[in-house]
Image (tube, rainbow, N blue to C red; front, side):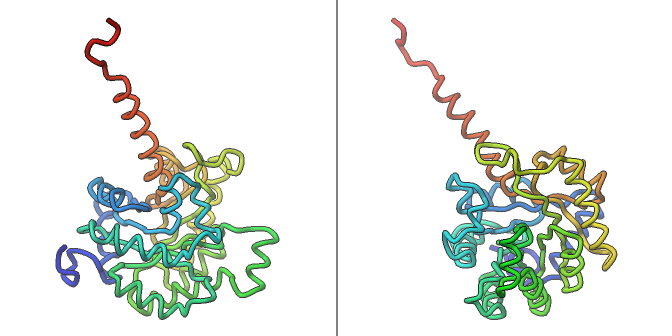
Length: 290
């Protein structure tokens, strides 16, 4: 690995990450961030040219063949899982791309300032609010809000990260959440429009149309930029599955790029492994059929 304090490798200071992203935009390119649940994913996402690699606890479940929503459930310590994936799988194999740690900010057992110090010490260049309660709605969301596990905890975490010079790229599902995050110091806002469709474990009925997703993303982008016009905005989830879908959001909703987890990591493995296995299974055997 390169020297971590020369701007040539992890960890980066916040302004170094922002400088890299601004340079990407100045070249006329879209910013692409990707979730990595394994080291092999991270290695080839970097080779493919992603701008950010995000380590979520959901990546472990996703790459174990389960839906990413498992990352929202009580199947493990979300913070510990993200840290472990980062320490032993992703950070050792990524040379240049900033690596971001998913932080479960509403975990009442953690002193968040203390945990962020550990995140920074490990060599992550920034934070992301995942698991996030912004994608929980209805009665259960109200219960979370009223019992000390509110979205405001995620906003507070981003404020702490800003004080610690950690870059932040955050999920929001509503305009008011975007405003709160930007006011707290978030650098990049991701308009989250739901669980990704497609593949073996993507949602089918529990999603929105592309038109509805576009309307939601527009509202989030406008809210974020009303607070700070320099805020970088990305899209994620729901019907936004392919590069064409992400391009649609850039063109019609004013986003600067896309964040892919299932749409990059899971879909790449599902399609490639399926087809390659079938090719191997179809190879001829000497003397067969005689």
